[in-house]
Image (cartoon, rainbow, N blue to C red; front, top):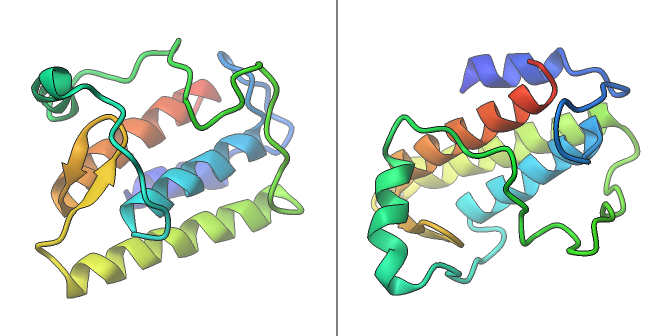
Length: 145
């Protein structure tokens, strides 16, 4: 994950996405919101029907990438972008890093706990790491990183 965070430092605030509508700062803030699900700050509800959960978890644990056309239910469904939370991209990066530190600290003290992911169900530390790698790589590719 260290390398992925280093790549985020290369992200220019004015970078134009290769796909999707998010600005660079929106993307960094979006990653932070999802990290909040994995550190217990936000609580997710499972959106995947129980009969599809095994297939979703198999995808999570595979080497397959997240698809470019996926529309997050956490983004406005009318196609607009949410208001930015932080004053600039550097503040958003710092917040993301702090959220990541909270994730690492939580699981260092509670290694057997899980938190709900809205699509993949209850995830332990290793499963969250797998998800975050897929998710970060997806969005880094969005900006050609």
